[in-house]
Image (cartoon, rainbow, N blue to C red; front, side, top):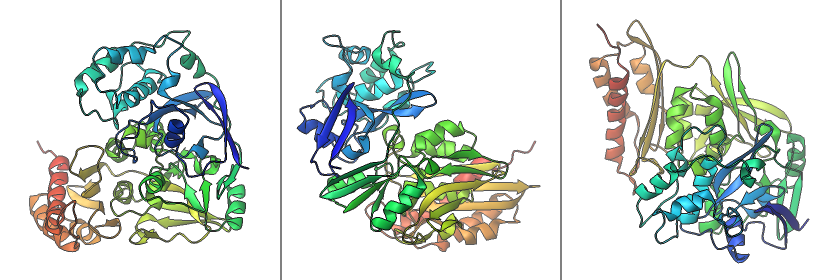
Length: 461
């Protein structure tokens, strides 16, 4: 119970006697694999990026993830590659060769860029190189143009490329896993087993993508007595498009949901690229983002506008809660002991007009000052239905009920919006903090409503 085995750069390794909270990055550097660097310890810089093999149909997908946020225990039975594992002996990998042509200067960020490029290099069905694959990797000296040029110069993998061949073989199955070394790490493989573990360890801390917990471990030195890993529970990995609702399992990563939906929910398609970076979305889950109950989390405003419900499950059964009733206070929810989020349901049909706006100091990879999502249905030029989801203006994410009620039945025109902008600015009393003043946040509410109107007003001829 005190040993973990996984495949690293093609070779099986076994580790024992380490703290269950140790990150993959910390262990790699202790093991002498120094290519992966620590820049931020919170998943913002990408210097620690590694490749992780994830199931993809009958084969695998190589995904770039932050090793500073990935606990070593999460690698049990899995496969991972670092920058040291790309080259074949003295022969550099094509991505490494491309970066040598001016894409690397001080070299600190280079391993992360190389790994993220490699993930895109091996993406199945790739026609062109998607530069968004490099999001979450920061360069502080070379500048991004030569890095972009290196990425765009890449062709396709050679037929005898070892990693290209690996894509066709199935991913290693995740087995039930238990590790004890001071703290306890548990990984069930079914809901039934999960509830048995919860009964034995009722204070266990749930672990999904780890993009929030990893920051606590690194920067706040958080340590749990028991960690309960949800990544091998198939009941949390479901994706279903029905006649009345879309259901996304709580354990589905945001990247998986984005690929599966293929833009069929326009509001989510707008939101996905604005949520952190590709590196984070490859690990972050919808259930995890809701479960943290942050007032500035980006998924709640979008899901509130979509009218989403949260499916909760315990050993006693399931219950469904409307998302607007899920949050009860600052980082507090209706979840009871022994209960967890199983999935999110989005009712159909979708509102014809929907937008998501994120006000932050940077356009991408930043925390929201204010986030707002709107979903609108018009009938004969009047508002038939409107849902407004907001974040960053109160202790919890919430709906703008007063503004919605004011606009329903009103003509979708400037006079109505002018009055509604005053309603929404009076509906909330935001706080002052280092991201923005209360006055700024209040002004943003009115401005975002005007922006939504300007982008969605009906065109008459």
